[in-house]
Length: 369
Image 1 (cartoon, rainbow, N blue to C red):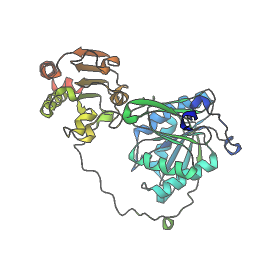
Image 2: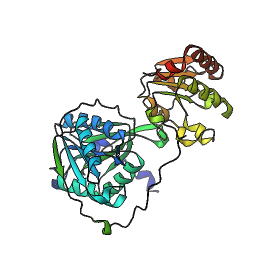
Image 3: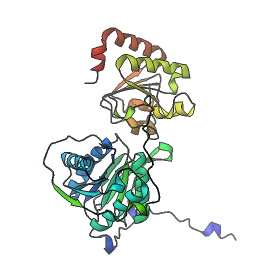
Image 4: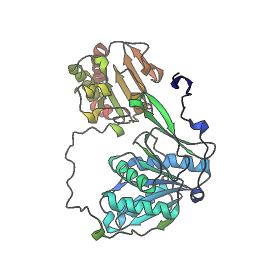
């Protein structure tokens, strides 16, 4: 007789079946940290968005919110510190040393890892930018802790564990991930997923400095020069006030010109859903959604886009979503603020003409104000 018929399949335990047993060495880890991404004198806006989200987590946990600034000695770092306090930080940790003038993985990872081991935060948040992703992966690997990437929502559980939600299976599902038995709990969040908090001018608070335990001769990679990105035509979708996008419902690549015409008429950026990039109809920097750009415009017009969850998580932070689709049962109508059931190919030219007649160049610039 086959033994397979008598074998009970093993089922992997879910969140409810996992017991949190935090090792003693992690029990004194407290506070929420946000890494402030500083490059060539500018703080990436995602850092301020994370300070706003970190403030909520810290208040729930009844702990402090700290900013982390790594950079060269001087005004650049001092500016980032002042901005951290203006956006809600209770204190700021600084590592300022000449090797941190330009981003390199080795000195930045060493500085942040040493800070964590010395001051022991329970949560560490970074932006899911090119720099943030590279740094977060190295730090999490060195610390042997968990890292949840590209999160769309952050919260704390009843036991104080970080609940990090992100899309999975190609954006078709949302899952919540916990790092139960390790610290710090790390997560990256893409720009524009979280709202920008209000900036409030206030004096610089408590600052704690930490020395970088590397010198330039210890670092393998060297910065030979800096070449600025000359791709001035690249899309700035993430921070546009008005965005018009097209999807497969437009039927053909040439119909994307209708989207561009409307965007030009109202002073907007134009974009598309993922299938259009896969077909080669638009470049990848114009893709909107979980695997493209996350946007938070004041107005978003989606023409011929079905609105699958992969797209939804990239646009649901918009103040006003207008959906144009021939299918009244399209998923996008479930979260759009205004739905228009019609053929976008016929509707877009009429809408463009109406805007062109009514908007002067000056009022067009003020549409989203």
